[in-house]
Structures are given as structure tokens and as C-alpha cells.
Length: 415
Image 1 (cartoon, helix red, strand yellow):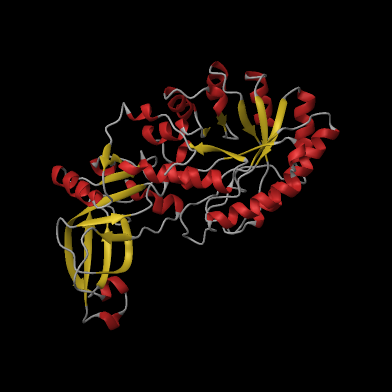
Image 2: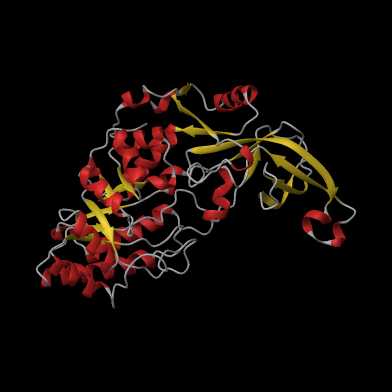
């Protein structure tokens, strides 16, 4: 299955991992776990993660991925990625500590937060994490005073107003009006600037966002040569998705556009190393969230549709054992639109207007506001696919509910 892809299988040793002989065994595993607990849980399919990396290597072979730890910091996820040669994008001291704790060497880490506290920079220095980013003069001076031997990437802003979540208002210097002067100041200050980085935003819907930013980066590489500061590293950030949702571009189409832009603006004879910071690309698809209906209420359908014409129709309000303060926090932070499905298929096709609520006492805790579902009953399982991105890392224990546990598994033909 893996062809030439290799990873160190000894990473599995510290973890309790189920090995499943058949796809159908996943349903049995879900029922077995559910019998032991009333809490929601994640299933983590290691085989899917392995295949996602194969897919990356196939379509973006010249771009080395630095996984964005903030997306999902599950230790097994990080360990498997590390064993396959993936490096890491960290945004804080704690994330750096986490990655170092699994045996990753510091040269495989980029401290990709353009605004860092002094203590974090000092910690990066003590651990020899050299690569870090900046986008303004104050940050530049701070880094230089605390870690003069660091190797810096200047972050430029992108103009991608069609991304699900854009970052240009918060991070990045203007590549035309600000970046040239900032690069010059860095050189005068004696900083070691080694590259340019950008991030087109979460859920990229326009491939031109990458093309335009790559073109702007090339101008700055040329300017670096003029200033006597040759650059060697280009970081094209994140924005990749393995799941075609929220209008995000299909990965293969996006990869083709990026490869064409890199071939034109950064031909191989420039000897520029290109990296990226994928997060959700790796994290979302391998994680399936399993929830249980803990209660329900029969109502007039108009209460859900807010249409008086539905007064005579039946609707249902369901309450499940997770919510937006837990694993569904991604609804708020990432504009995720979760898609629920039943573990057991129904013989009847009849559906009703329904709302699915989370388990807390907050009326904002709503997962599916208006949808069509068959009639559900207490203890039925409702499954949500592609839930690994920005769910575990942003969940809370609001109302006293514990964070969702993860149960990893791998199929025999994936080992």
C-alpha cells in the first residue's frame, strides 16, 4: 500500500492502537467503545494519514511540509508525521516543547509566529530552533537582541479576500510598500534573513492567491541579491485541504497551479528550498467524531424552520454529548459545517426538520441548526467525518464536560 513510503513502526510502541483486519470492523470498534462510556470520542485512522502524506509527495514533491501543530497536537499524529519525514511549524514555546519531546531535532522546526514573547525567543535560542518569522521592525529588533544567530523569514501579506479565513489584517508586511524597506533594515541591523514566507488563508478558494504571492516573493529574492543578501528559503504557508468543502479548491488542482508558479518564478537552477505549513490537510480527514444522542424533544417544525407554514408538521430537537465548547469549537473558529450520519442505516427514508444541540447549558451551543434527519432516539450514535482540524486543540471543559478522548486504529493492510 505504501509503495516507497517508509516510516518507523516503533513509534506505535508507546500507544494503544487497535489493528483491524477489515473495514467493517470499524463499526464494531465504535460499538465496543460506546458500550464502555457515555462520552463522545474520536476514532483516528492512521492509514488515512499515511495515504495523505503519499498524496502530498505525489503532487507536491518539491515542497517539504512543516505540519502546523496548532491544528491538532495529538502525540501519535505528530509522531507518525515525524517518522515519515514531515517537519513542524510551531507557534509557541509549548508547541516547540511538544515537538522536541517526541524526538524531533530542532532544525526540523520553524517558529512561525510573527509576534513572539521574549521568553519564547529565549527558549528557541536555548533549544537551537533557528528558523523564525517576522513582519515588522519592532519584532526584528527584539529577535536580534535575544537571538542574533537566528535565521529569519520575512512574512509578507497576501490579498486573498475569498479565503474562508484570511490573515492579511493581522500578519504580514505589504510586499510592495513595506517589505523592501524592512528587508534593508534587517540587513543593516545584521540579521540573517534567509527567506520569505506568506499564508494565503484558511480554505483557499483561489489559486491566484498562491501565484501572486509567489511572484511577490520572487521580487524580494531579487532585491535580496541586490542588497547582497541572497535568500534561500521560500515558505508558501498553509491553506491546503484534503476535503473539498466550504468552496476550498481540490488539492490536486491547487497543487498543479502552485507547481506551475514555482517552475516559472523559482526555477530549479535558483536552488531555493520550498516549504509549506499544511495543518488541516493532514489533520482533518483521519479523525471521525462519534457522538451519542442523550436526549430529544418533539416540537412543531416551525420552531426549527421559523416558518409558520410548518406549524402542523413534526420536528425534532436532539441533544448530543459534545458541542461547540468541545470538539465542535471548529464551527466557531473555522466556519466548519459538520455533516452527521447515523452508524446504522434506516430502512425508512422519512426525515423531519431537526436541530442538533450540544450538551452545555448555553443556547449558542448548536451544531446543526436546520437539517433533515430521520427520527432518532436516545443512545443512537451520530458520526461526524473529517473532524480532526481545530477541534481537539481548541476544545474546553466548559460546564465541567471533559475533553474528547482519541482511539487510534490501523488496518492490517496499512501496516
